[in-house]
View 1 (cartoon, helix red, strand yellow):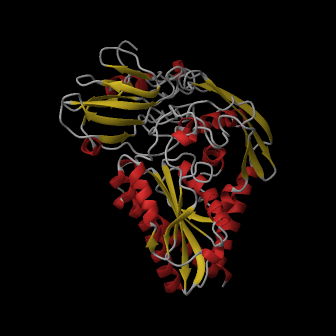
View 2 (tube, rainbow, N blue to C red):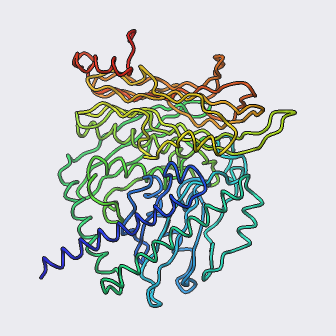
View 3 (cartoon, rainbow, N blue to C red):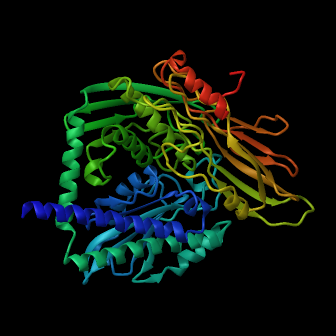
Length: 538
């Protein structure tokens, strides 16, 4: 009978994952912002009554999921159990208690069955605007970057907080989109709750305690078994990235001990005066993700499987304290996996991929009618990606978001959002680093204001001055480029202007190569040439 019980628990575990996957798909289908419904910049999960993550949706980003695993505990610390009711929904965008910057809204809702608290559902999504300076690196403190919502009730016993809605509408540039996304987040948790209660009623479960113990015990044991197979010791790595107006050094020491892998960011440069700082909750999310990708990629993500991976750091750009500006925390945060994987490459030589573009080449466009012209204003957010690093046995992936995993929005959806024209979006030849395995290609994107319009844009780009490095003798990927069509070079970060009649050219960076280039076969070189990945002159 024990075997039958274990099989039943495994089936229930799979059912729970399907519940949170439907939760996430609800957000995808109802969201107003293109970053959510088209790119999947979100997360969803279910937690036990103590706030420990039982299961996460496959849909979503590591930065959202792994921060959410910690964020729910902040909600439980702020809202007493006796003040939680059926129909409640709680919200925050506090960077240090949520997912690292103000643009991400996290909602948590208690799930009651027959009057008894059985779970919490949580979800996160990036909204198009939170007021302030807008999505960019130019703020000098978090107070300039937009409205900060402390942990509070979005809905009390099913009644939405109208005062909060009014405050939001008065502080953001796209109130309908933003408020719509708030309701989508709430609906996402409600769907998760309904499906969970249906599952529990169908199977006769009164609580998730037994299932939770099954999930945690198996996940913890499997993860510890993988860690036991790693070499013991400490390995260091550092890398230099563009920063804002000066380069930034990121450093780490990775230590493998019995039952633990620790990542420490001592040696990393101090906090910046610009909005590229990263709260530790977000740096930790991507550090754990990098280690888990190598050590335990097939073990489901939950509190127990994440528990053996720990992160420590003094105060620095990867552990920025309040009230540091953190709007572009993803730029440094997305570099963390390459940083950590570089240390792992010393522990596991020949087994770790090369560096890639890493940080998304996001662009936020604020478009308006040109002087003397009629038209409409709009806030447009567009995700783009460079190439990933080559892998030990495969070429890198072109124009692919690693580590975030978000999709690129379709051009049609982006142009529908506001009066811009995307004239070109294509792979960038010769941008992948040379090697036995070639780095992934970046892409070229050409954007212009629609006729009679102009726009300001927030540049959030890296790898312009410090390209992705190859591994084990592989070459570096191509550097990124930000310019107007006439050749005028623009800055990789900060708000800048594109006048009517001009076009903005973005050339996203390529990934590094793996192994010596002379070891690449003639057949592979010919295939690269035929596909247009490299040119005759290369």
